[in-house]
Length: 95
Image (cartoon, rainbow, N blue to C red; front, side, top):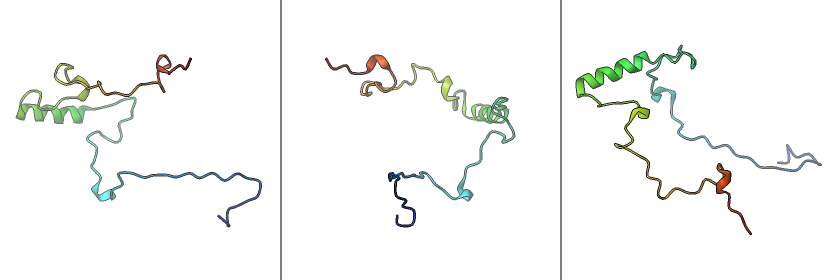
């Protein structure tokens, strides 16, 4: 602090947390081609891999998460906290 302190400025502390760090040698490669741009979204390699898995292990062995039937799986929301930080109609009002 003595090296960076300057009179007339208020001191503020900040921190940075780095989580899930791993060596580059343990990085799992992507199934999607790196040259594919987000706008193009060429997922053909991924779809081919999923098709091969489903052919070998049976229909529905793997599926895209957004394609899962709601009746087969659904979020349990009975203990969900309020959304007063994102929904204005749920902001508590004191009278």
